[in-house]
Length: 97
Image 1 (tube, rainbow, N blue to C red):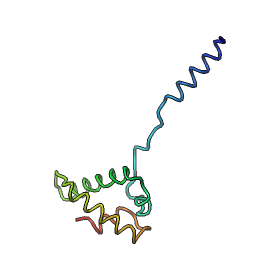
Image 2 (tube, helix red, strand yellow):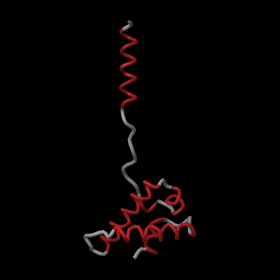
Image 3 (tube, rainbow, N blue to C red):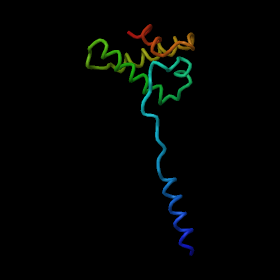
Image 4 (cartoon, rainbow, N blue to C red):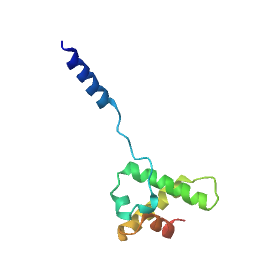
């Protein structure tokens, strides 16, 4: 076998094995209601959990009640259906309890 071909094959295999980098920083103030509604469920779940933590921190509460996170996330989604151009942060501030 040609050692050059083996080296190229090994290099290509190593490059394909490198995982893709995920976006790790999200500017919540730039997400629109429309983008939130079109997001995959997994991303909606992450954003909903973030919303719960954000507003618990604003109230200086160190706990998160999952029941409220689910209920408030549904309220935000319903509001966003009517105001797709609004930012998600604005929708949260108007509807979060």
